[in-house]
Length: 198
Length: 198
Image 1 (cartoon, rainbow over the protein chains, first blue to last red):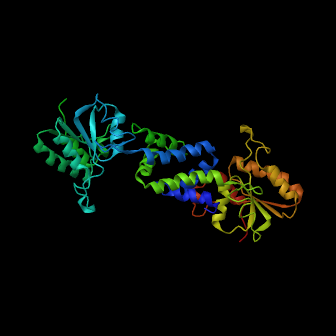
Image 2: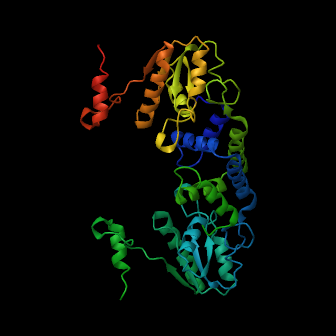
Image 3: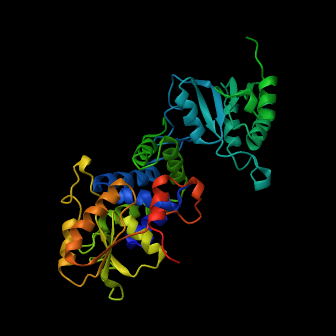
């Protein structure tokens, strides 16, 4: 950008966002420049608000404005069922479906020995503490179906089994609307081994 | 989003940006949430800075922090040559090439009779005033090569011709790296009629 300093600065800051290159940053900056001052102020304030207000839930490590979070504090949810996810956005994805009635536990990462991430670096200890407190009947492992997510699920299953609670893994198979012809071998394999009686 | 209010608010605000849908807004919001407070503050401040500092140049209507803009205030630029563009970002695109030594005039739009945009709604009057002041030898019409841009260029050419100055139009033809086979008819036609002796 060869424009004024304030515009160049904004473009540079916007470029630090994921998936935002120079062209996109310039388009966004020009949009902000042309929008009303009130609109720009709302965006500017929302950015600081999320930093000031959002924090981690002390129970499930989800992101929340109030501690404990809305889900952990809800007596109508089934607190005997804990769904373990990698990140808070996975939790929000499941909540959007609107069918799960249990509570959650956010690991804040996955096991990744090559990157030096062991069980101590993610919230495994906190999960075990919740189980030890009692009342938990089922743990649903909803980590991502990729190498790290699978390894993390395996590790958690092995660690939790001795506690005598049901440990389940979300189903892996063909996505709805998918096509057998285009499915990869791993997905097809999981789809067959995970077949259910109808 | 079913997350905390501050996060939902930020996602909603980000969604007002052009080309940003729900998924992108959520990815950006999570990035901001995970970035340091200082980083978020820089972005938040840059947004307000551009609204507070950036204004229109009183000479060429470009965007600038200081009036007149850097280009209009530069005595080393050729003030007898005015390049007319639709928007300030077009000016920055030409400046990035680093070859043009004249000054600019930003129309802040194009003629578009169907949308009720006539010569009064864009900065034509201001351009004529600059020409009338004297000293201008050439006007380069660099509006976009589409219906509105061509119509605006035609209108300006007709209006400026009686002033006895050179009025030129940027070349339209095959883009560099392009392919004759895939060029549209209009581009090929312009490419032929605009051929130059080598």
